[in-house]
Length: 630
Ligand code: PEP
Ligand code: MG
View 1 (cartoon, helix red, strand yellow):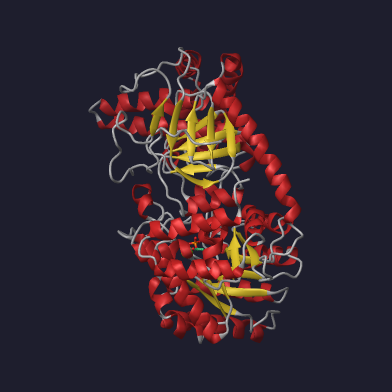
View 2 (view 1 turned 180 degrees about the horizontal axis):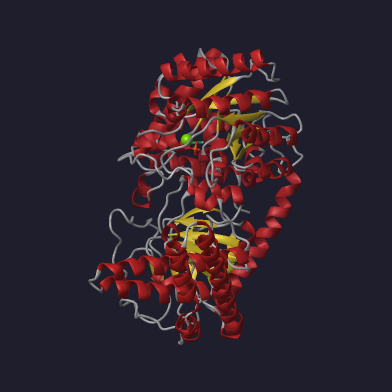
């Protein structure tokens, strides 16, 4: 399949920089008559196909009904419904209102018993408001006339009441507005409970949908019930954002950085997400739909074909072994690693246990997660990275976090661990205990100075001493590595190499910090390129430093799993690459089709290049030679 060539391939503008106007939006390609500003469509005329281009972050094709999530759960998911399902939707509404009323009545009785009539009366008033026939009647009317889901309809109705109350000047009416919003939350909770969704995740309904949202934080993405999510598309986000990383882990097609599309999406009935080309198509026409259905089948065949590579060695045509490892965020990803032939886990991002959690995981909870991973990898190595919290990875339980103006340069990752010693201690103890069960190695993220490494190592030693003195089983001498993902660490790699057992290059952050380009910001996504000569030269320095001390080095950033970069990385001397499990078969195919000598020559040439475009041209040429067109 080829992308619609008329679409401007530039990524979109950010919320932060202000959205482009709809008519001039570079991401919008309308199929249909004329190229004038798009007329507002109504839901009764047959829908016009709209195509948006963004940044592909997780491959695959998703075709399905859209579900629009509003920012940070401020409004419930909005879904268009088929006329045939009107009755069902009205029944859902009645059930949620009944359940909310019963809950409010029970709360009233409890309050009367424990707190007295003053408080109980407030809850009694809530129960009566929920039972008010006008709420049911007006919400039903919205469902029937606008063909929307029940939670969206009742939210619009109650929000309308609240806004009208707020407009009245007497202060007691404003207080009533707060009551109305409270009641709405009570009702929305019933919808979530009926759908079996956790309290901090949006209710996704009972059928799988394509999720459309302005943005999703890594914790929101991690909290999605994957059985109900066919794929997702967001207006914001960049190629190496952590949200993108979670999408890959969940193996759902995803496109981010699409620019403004939500208002159009609210009216659409069916959507396609093309996670390979980075497209979102609203209301595809019959021809496009058929083409994508065929494409999805061809894709499935291709993946089945690649599965045959699983048991073959990862070795170049001229006999050079290149170890391929899996990146994981959740213990549940281990089977995907093993099935696809991973030599072990090259990066376990442990912070995901903290995201979308209602409390800070204890040492024992962390140990249980690590032990599950170590026990299920069948003796293969597991690199456990200490917490990389901060910036966009904020635990849901930590709402009172200090606001930082520049969080990517702020209290993030190892800096958090070194400040919050109790947090660090519990994690190090859990890792040391898990190390007694198998081949565990510990990795410190975002090290930017030698002092930081020394402090982290000292904390590890003291955690080990504690465990030994308590007689708790652990492995105190496990291998210790650092992530090289800050330019200062790359420059000082020779000094760092003397004090660690291995390096792991995090090209996502290394690119972000070297080029001063936010990896999650779609407005500068075109400036983000891991193949920039500055990044390539830093990688070469790190490999040289590791070689001179005889320590192994892995690339575990997104670059390590991208076929385009395989020749360059092998040519620069890398013999170990770690990636999301779904990329393992394709990378093995590439490794088995290249020669170390060609890769070396290509890397030599890349180190002479002065622009990213020059390096990319070399890489594309190299890949074409490895896989000549039939
Ligand atoms: C990286 O920065 O390349 C990396 C692997 O770490 P993360 O993506 O989790 O920041
Ligand atoms: Mg990183």
